[in-house]
Image 1 (cartoon, helix red, strand yellow):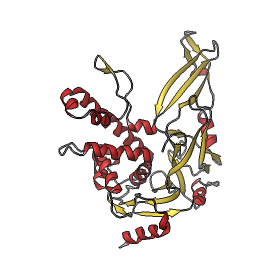
Image 2 (cartoon, helix red, strand yellow):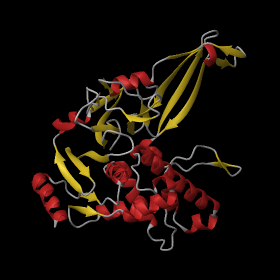
Image 3 (cartoon, one colour):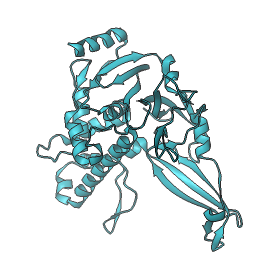
Image 4 (cartoon, rainbow, N blue to C red):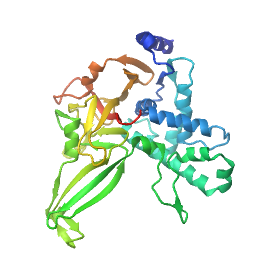
Length: 374
């Protein structure tokens, strides 16, 4: 059977270097579900996230009649992979995919979907579920006293948040936030009175505009570049009590543990009246240093995964993922899992000419902070 052949091939390739306790499983495709499979593989090899999910599974599996949701389906899938007796093979994420389609009509059709939209939807949905569970636990004193205090903490999985008049004082923090959330600060300086107004906003990923023959570093510089607000874009300064010319810039205030960078490869072209895929060559380094951050300056990151879009346009194509696990790079293409060499990563940077036979381009990049345990 092909499944076994693929598995034994990967096991032979790794030989005695096969990591103790690790599992490398392909995921079945149910007709254009590669967008989902590619993101699931990356999240599985995002070790802090995987460990928290499996922890959650251990602490919540006792309840037999618990309502199924996206979180329970994801924990079941991850638990299924991690507890396989075989080291390699193929697993069917059918229940999870069915739940995604039930939850969000956007993913119901067999049309080509966007992996970045799916990642955003999934992380936000997990946060919502954890928040609902935490609120339910806090609202029910009997439930929280009858269950051990450690398990009620597990649901929120963040510092216990003090409440004032029944309202939560601090923003709710889950283990999804612990892994992926960073803080941006939007600074606007009035050019008349020099007053700086700063507004913070949280993010799970950074969406970067791209240019031909550029790099992640230059894209990040452009993201944080200063923009002048004048003419009809003037800024209302509270101190001057009037519209004034101003300078605006976006800075990363607090870098996340896992930095997710989305390259805006799909762009609406006005004269064409449709979206077009930008196959631009954008170099992504194996090691990345974030400069000019407000907190934790010069945070260093290491690339551990890439979701790749294969195809010439936004409405068709295929997604695969490249994942670094125990110092080996693996290529996940639905049911297939193969080893690849790090030296081949450059072919996913993009094309320096507009028309090229290479249509495999890095789309979502995942970097882990070297300063925090992974």
